[in-house]
Length: 563
Image 1 (cartoon, one colour):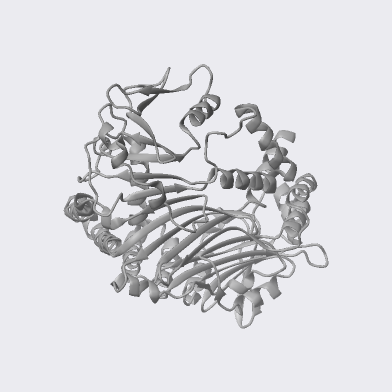
Image 2 (tube, rainbow, N blue to C red; image 1 turned 120 degrees about the vertical axis):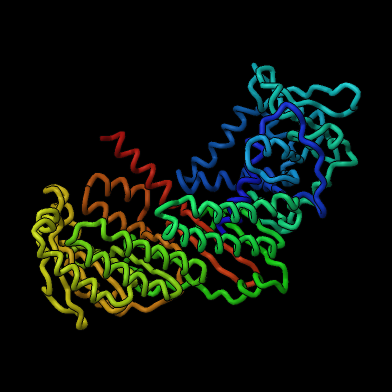
């Protein structure tokens, strides 16, 4: 998937890289353009921008946008631009490998902007641009209705920009030959829109329409990569094995690309959840191996999901899916490389590195590596407890190696506070502790928040755990007994009220700012999330909460300015 995403992104930005005085040669793609862009109607965009500003800064600020628009565009506002229809665009790619800037110069595309009329739109453009450097519609001699779009101070030797009003739209050609702006050659905008689209921006990529040379480029890159292995010298054995495994993974991704009917990227706004998101999808061709693989994908589940609860002030879950055989092979060879490289480490650390790598080797035989961190509270005393966990298959050997290393004089001098081993037992698991090695002021704040400076560690049969706080024992019991549950691949969460209390415990002034910005809602929300699921198509979604992240940034700068 990563290879596909990188290639797709390169295609979308390629035109911006290819400044050229000469228009690109005409390219024909079977079935239509390989890349299509769709932007929501202007009215929908404007309404959503107001809502986003209102969520972040307050409802009154959303209304200020109307005043800003009137100040810029005057009483006519957006007159001339049809605010009820989407803007669409499409790109054509050259039938050659895209290896350098000169190759990208042969990409060309079009943007179709909905208008209410030619004169009305020209008037809108004149109000939109700076008075001292307006955008001019310069007629092309001998080609009625075709314009060159230029500014007085623009670089007229850069990408050629032509325009024609046609079928209720202004078609703008970027790097395209004049003949392609003839009415008969322009694609109807209505045929390029995706019916029922709800996103603000949608980019669609049709891999079947890629020129053969671009598809072949990937295969050649893999071959070139493998041919470089002998040039790695002493590293050819270790690095070569890793590169071969990576090449196998990349080839699988390339095969999946051929089995994909359509790939898309979407910018979305969810008003109810108060979040914006970047979504992507890959629609496989029916009956292909890729379609069967997606249909068999299991929902993501984190084995520590239960650590995030209604009492969580802030926390997160992270899952690294490693079920793909090719990815397992890469990780396994990285572990092997680590085993060979451990001899460069200090002697007293080698047994620990050895056990760590052995444990990782066992762990990656599973389907995922799961992480969890939760700061829960406050309790009756107003204190918080932090618990962190990561799955690790049989950590007993690592625990023994650390105990031996802790007796080393050099190690003791470096870590400062001594580790206390076997201070307690929870559910039959030995618990160790160490006092936080922090500056005096930071240590005091730490003690105020958690009620203690001690950090407790435990090495279990299925994981490694770290707990801080007065209620550490109950928290460790919960972690050891944690059960897997449905979860996002990444789920960073926060409770506005409890997070405000947590910040206030460490800094009264910061707590006041946090309470004002975050509010007092005692409900857990996803600050940032990533989902990844199969089925009829591969879908991923990265979301960002507008209630937390932008407001936290405002609070940070408020404190910095106040300080």
